[in-house]
Structures are given as structure tokens and as C-alpha cells.
Amino acid sequence: MATGRYSQEDLNRINKAIIAAESKTTGEIVPVIVGQSDFYPAAHFRLSLLGAFLAIFINYQLNHDGDNLNYLFLFILGSLIGFFCGHIAILKKLFSLKDELEEETRQRAIESFLLNGITDTKERNGVQLFISILEHKAMINVDKGLQERLGQHAQEKWQSVLNKLLGQFKKGNEVEGICQAISDMGEVLAEHYPSPHKNAELSDELPNKLIIDL
Image (cartoon, rainbow, N blue to C red; front, side):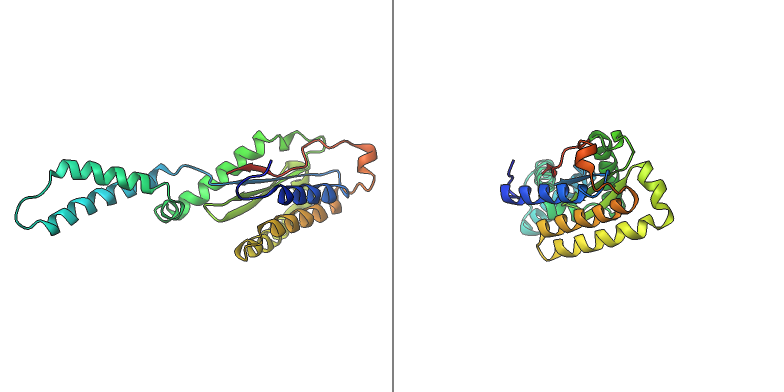
């Protein structure tokens, strides 16, 4: 189903990339993209305090004759405006701590990994490409079967895939980046779980599509 961010043609292209990558391996690739990994209530709280302070400060500066508006009213009004400003993506990110962004993205990726059944494959060789738009972060999570086979060099391989993906995102080539990442992940899987006759031997254990929550 097409979204405001991706057309049906884009989605079809990504789905075909998954099928092509998985045709060489018994592994399963699940790309997931979300608008943001958390609501980040702390950012809204910080903006509320800033809004309240600015409302009172501006009123004080503009009304030196003592005819100031009710400060409680200004505090509440400024707080509400600040809170709703937190819905603006750039402000939400700006008023969130770096550690908060990293931790919430990691937690959302783990949650998605479990909810989408990536641990349910027969050989425990599922791999997830997780992208969170607000945080500008991407990560790859793998099931234990694949992790054991990859060993100590796994992180280097996945980081190389992510670096190329993020490079394409910075250029505005999101679909190209996702398709390339899926292809690269398929190559890694094929090294350790090759299956040139997969379609004849095994049916897909997980859907071949981009999972979207924007």
C-alpha cells in the first residue's frame, strides 16, 4: 500500500529487491521504517517550560507600565504552545538528548524485531534493517543463528552496509539506499546460508515487503 513518503512503484521495487536477495539464501530479510521511535515526552516537557518562560518574559518586556497580563494565564498558554511545538519533528529532535534518541531507537528496533516474528525462522537466520526517520538512525539486528556464524567481524560488515545506506539517504535517494542495503545484506546471508534452490526447497517464512509505520 502506497504512503505519502513512498509510491506503489517504490514499494514494488523494494519488495523485488527482497525477493532477489533472498533467492540466494535461506535467510530472511525484513526491512522496517518508522517515522519516529518514541513520542519523546521529555522534549515536550522542555519545550513547555521554554514556552512558559518566553511568554512571561515577552509580556514583562512589552509592558513596563505595570499593566501586565495575568502571569498564571501566560504560564499556561506558553506551556501549551510549547508542548504542541514538540510535534514539529525538528524541534522534537533538537530538544531530545542524544542518549534518549539512541536508546529509544534501539528499544524500538528490538520491539519491532520481536513483533515481526524475525526470531521465528527455522534456522534462526533472520535479519532486520531498521530505519527511524526522526532520529536519522539505522541499524541492523540479526537472530542468534546468523550471529553465531558471522562471529566477531559481524559488526564491521553491517556497519559498511549502514554507511552506504545513510549516504544515499543524505543524497535523497532513499529507495535506492534501501534496495542496495537489502542486496548487500543478501550477499552476507548467502555466504553463510547459501541456497540457490531455495524456492524449490523452502517457502518464505516471512513476508517479502517493507514494513512501514510513519
